[in-house]
Length: 159
Image 1 (cartoon, rainbow, N blue to C red):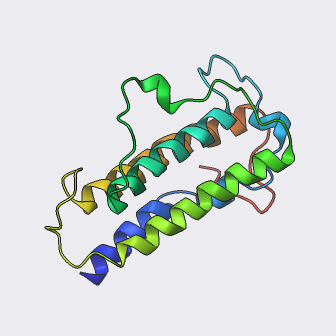
Image 2 (tube, rainbow, N blue to C red):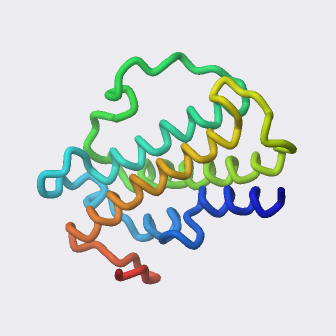
Protein backbone atom coordinates (compact mmCIF):
# COMPACT_ATOMS: atom_id res chain seq x y z
CA UNK A 1 0.00 0.00 0.00
CA UNK A 2 2.87 2.42 0.73
CA UNK A 3 4.16 2.09 -2.83
CA UNK A 4 0.71 2.99 -4.17
CA UNK A 5 0.43 5.98 -1.84
CA UNK A 6 3.87 7.22 -2.88
CA UNK A 7 2.97 6.82 -6.55
CA UNK A 8 -0.14 8.98 -6.09
CA UNK A 9 1.72 11.61 -4.07
CA UNK A 10 4.43 11.75 -6.73
CA UNK A 11 1.83 11.97 -9.50
CA UNK A 12 0.15 14.96 -7.86
CA UNK A 13 3.48 16.74 -7.79
CA UNK A 14 4.71 15.51 -11.18
CA UNK A 15 7.63 13.58 -9.71
CA UNK A 16 9.42 11.45 -12.31
CA UNK A 17 7.03 12.63 -15.04
CA UNK A 18 7.68 16.33 -15.57
CA UNK A 19 8.85 19.52 -14.00
CA UNK A 20 7.10 20.20 -10.70
CA UNK A 21 4.28 22.74 -10.64
CA UNK A 22 6.35 24.90 -8.33
CA UNK A 23 9.32 24.94 -10.67
CA UNK A 24 7.18 25.42 -13.79
CA UNK A 25 5.68 28.57 -12.21
CA UNK A 26 8.94 29.89 -10.76
CA UNK A 27 9.74 33.42 -11.86
CA UNK A 28 6.41 33.90 -13.63
CA UNK A 29 5.55 37.58 -13.93
CA UNK A 30 2.20 39.36 -14.08
CA UNK A 31 2.89 40.39 -17.68
CA UNK A 32 3.63 36.87 -18.89
CA UNK A 33 0.82 35.31 -16.84
CA UNK A 34 -1.77 37.55 -18.50
CA UNK A 35 -0.27 37.65 -21.99
CA UNK A 36 -2.35 36.36 -24.87
CA UNK A 37 -0.05 34.04 -26.80
CA UNK A 38 -0.63 32.87 -30.35
CA UNK A 39 -3.95 31.19 -30.88
CA UNK A 40 -4.18 29.86 -27.33
CA UNK A 41 -7.74 29.99 -26.04
CA UNK A 42 -6.48 30.99 -22.60
CA UNK A 43 -3.61 32.66 -20.77
CA UNK A 44 -1.26 31.15 -18.21
CA UNK A 45 -3.24 32.97 -15.52
CA UNK A 46 -6.45 31.32 -16.67
CA UNK A 47 -4.72 27.93 -16.62
CA UNK A 48 -3.51 28.46 -13.05
CA UNK A 49 -7.01 29.41 -11.92
CA UNK A 50 -8.56 26.50 -13.85
CA UNK A 51 -6.25 23.93 -12.28
CA UNK A 52 -7.06 25.36 -8.84
CA UNK A 53 -10.79 25.27 -9.54
CA UNK A 54 -10.73 21.54 -10.25
CA UNK A 55 -8.28 20.80 -7.44
CA UNK A 56 -10.80 22.45 -5.09
CA UNK A 57 -13.50 20.15 -6.46
CA UNK A 58 -11.29 17.11 -5.99
CA UNK A 59 -10.56 18.04 -2.38
CA UNK A 60 -14.25 18.71 -1.77
CA UNK A 61 -15.03 15.15 -2.87
CA UNK A 62 -12.38 13.82 -0.50
CA UNK A 63 -13.63 15.90 2.43
CA UNK A 64 -17.31 15.45 1.51
CA UNK A 65 -17.76 19.21 1.52
CA UNK A 66 -20.16 19.36 -1.40
CA UNK A 67 -19.94 22.27 -3.80
CA UNK A 68 -22.76 23.04 -6.20
CA UNK A 69 -22.54 20.97 -9.36
CA UNK A 70 -20.67 22.25 -12.37
CA UNK A 71 -23.19 22.70 -15.16
CA UNK A 72 -20.89 23.97 -17.92
CA UNK A 73 -17.19 23.79 -18.72
CA UNK A 74 -17.08 27.60 -18.67
CA UNK A 75 -17.57 27.55 -14.89
CA UNK A 76 -14.04 26.20 -14.50
CA UNK A 77 -12.46 29.14 -16.32
CA UNK A 78 -12.04 32.73 -15.17
CA UNK A 79 -12.68 35.52 -17.66
CA UNK A 80 -9.87 37.76 -16.44
CA UNK A 81 -6.87 37.34 -18.72
CA UNK A 82 -4.33 38.07 -16.01
CA UNK A 83 -3.77 38.96 -12.37
CA UNK A 84 -4.08 42.59 -11.32
CA UNK A 85 -0.71 42.63 -9.59
CA UNK A 86 2.19 40.58 -8.24
CA UNK A 87 0.37 39.92 -4.95
CA UNK A 88 -2.60 38.36 -6.72
CA UNK A 89 -0.33 36.21 -8.88
CA UNK A 90 1.81 35.00 -5.97
CA UNK A 91 -1.32 34.32 -3.91
CA UNK A 92 -2.84 32.17 -6.66
CA UNK A 93 0.42 30.25 -7.12
CA UNK A 94 0.75 29.77 -3.36
CA UNK A 95 -2.86 28.50 -3.18
CA UNK A 96 -2.25 26.02 -6.01
CA UNK A 97 0.91 24.66 -4.38
CA UNK A 98 -0.75 24.48 -0.95
CA UNK A 99 -3.72 22.62 -2.42
CA UNK A 100 -1.40 20.07 -4.02
CA UNK A 101 0.36 19.59 -0.67
CA UNK A 102 -3.02 19.10 1.05
CA UNK A 103 -3.99 16.48 -1.52
CA UNK A 104 -0.68 14.70 -0.96
CA UNK A 105 -1.31 14.72 2.80
CA UNK A 106 -4.79 13.25 2.27
CA UNK A 107 -3.28 10.24 0.47
CA UNK A 108 -1.90 9.14 3.85
CA UNK A 109 -5.43 8.97 5.32
CA UNK A 110 -6.65 6.27 2.94
CA UNK A 111 -6.35 2.78 4.33
CA UNK A 112 -8.00 0.74 1.57
CA UNK A 113 -8.82 0.87 -2.12
CA UNK A 114 -12.52 0.44 -1.40
CA UNK A 115 -13.29 3.59 0.54
CA UNK A 116 -16.46 4.91 -1.09
CA UNK A 117 -16.94 8.53 -2.01
CA UNK A 118 -19.32 10.34 -4.28
CA UNK A 119 -16.63 10.20 -7.00
CA UNK A 120 -16.29 6.42 -6.93
CA UNK A 121 -13.38 6.17 -4.53
CA UNK A 122 -10.56 8.46 -3.38
CA UNK A 123 -8.03 6.90 -5.74
CA UNK A 124 -10.18 8.02 -8.68
CA UNK A 125 -10.11 11.56 -7.31
CA UNK A 126 -6.32 11.52 -6.98
CA UNK A 127 -5.89 10.08 -10.45
CA UNK A 128 -8.17 12.78 -11.89
CA UNK A 129 -6.32 15.54 -10.06
CA UNK A 130 -2.86 14.31 -11.06
CA UNK A 131 -3.82 13.81 -14.71
CA UNK A 132 -5.53 17.19 -14.86
CA UNK A 133 -2.53 18.95 -13.34
CA UNK A 134 -0.14 17.23 -15.76
CA UNK A 135 -2.31 17.95 -18.79
CA UNK A 136 -2.58 21.67 -18.13
CA UNK A 137 0.96 22.04 -16.79
CA UNK A 138 2.21 20.93 -20.21
CA UNK A 139 0.14 23.68 -21.80
CA UNK A 140 1.43 26.19 -19.28
CA UNK A 141 5.06 25.33 -19.99
CA UNK A 142 4.44 25.49 -23.74
CA UNK A 143 2.87 28.95 -23.36
CA UNK A 144 5.85 30.11 -21.30
CA UNK A 145 8.16 28.86 -24.05
CA UNK A 146 6.12 30.63 -26.70
CA UNK A 147 6.31 33.84 -24.63
CA UNK A 148 10.10 33.51 -24.43
CA UNK A 149 9.87 32.99 -20.66
CA UNK A 150 11.26 29.47 -20.30
CA UNK A 151 13.10 27.79 -18.70
CA UNK A 152 12.36 29.11 -15.21
CA UNK A 153 15.23 30.84 -13.35
CA UNK A 154 16.54 27.68 -11.69
CA UNK A 155 16.32 25.66 -14.92
CA UNK A 156 13.94 23.12 -16.37
CA UNK A 157 13.72 20.26 -18.75
CA UNK A 158 14.54 21.21 -22.30
CA UNK A 159 13.16 18.14 -24.04
